[in-house]
Amino acid sequence: MQDSVVSRIIDGSITIDSLTEFENLLKVFPNNPRLRRVFADFLAQEKSFDAVDAYRISANLFIQAGQTLQAIVSKIFEWRLAKPSHQEEQAFYSDLHKGSSKEAPVQSFFTRLSFQQLIAFMNELTPRYFPAQSTVKKFGDQENDISFVVSGALEETTHHRLKEDEKVREKTKKDLIENDFFGEIYPFEEEKVSQSDIKTISRVELAKISKSMLTKVCREYPDIEPLVHRLYEARLESDEKEFSKMVRKTVRHQLPTQVNLKVFQDHGGKAPLELTGFTDDISLGGACVVLGAKYQIGRSFDLTGRNVKIQMFLPIESITLNILGTIVWDKDVTLEGKTTAIVGIQFKEMTGADRGLLKDYCYGSEGEQNLIWSLWNSLLEK
Image 1: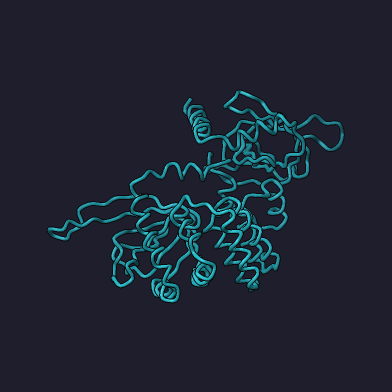
Image 2 (image 1 turned 90 degrees about the vertical axis):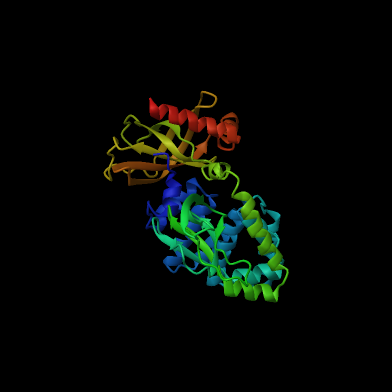
């Protein structure tokens, strides 16, 4: 139940198949770049020209979040639908560097490319989706491309040979997450076969470029090859480090927070409907609340559009926030084998003090968020 509702929408385990549902959910999380990207993909599938603007918005939000690779892939899809002008390409390059983050080697690689080099590289990148539990590469496959992980997670099982008899004697496993890459195609003049089996853990999006096309781009722009060399060197160094810090960043705002809801009736002076649950995603603008399987509300009681008072219990400071809002999205989904009601609440009114506390809660330090998860796990164990 700790899995994010938004993450489930992104990985496809919760499907939204109507424009209205998407628009209502975006009222709760207007600045979530991944949700915006899924919305753009939905519009593109519906052959709506609004997908162009949706991809542009998601690219801009990814830039603001310092997610260079993800911004590039969103822009690739935008430019597939509407060919950009030279000025638009230059503006994107400029924006990419204003908001760039160089924490990961892949991010650093892309931000070090010149304008012409980046455009040439983007023209050869091919985004591809893979469902969960699928094989992406097998031990012994020819190494023909390099793949950058745009979203999702994979498991890489590497087979090690002993030099004496060349037999496989040992296997090691590691996870590949967003901004990692795989594919042993460098140095270009060497022919290699995969020493690993790579399988998806969740739904995964990769951005691939073939060895032949990357070699061609490097011949046209020789300064790219040293960056490729540096990329592989950086990966060797990062393999020796823990990934826990990077993984922790992927669960920002997925903070399990206990809440009480008072859903106000429209007519008849009826008492408010009182519900309990916990937030599965939270931002300064709204939250998704999982009500739990015991609430069999059904379609006979439509929650969408109703005013609500949310009472939120923050575990760090033992503080209770009271926020007024509107339910703009509700859905019955299956979680852990049970039908569960989820509502999306757009915040309307809160005091300046409450806004400050909520901001500190959402954007707290790494240690604070680790403490929150520890408190949550302790509660589950009781």
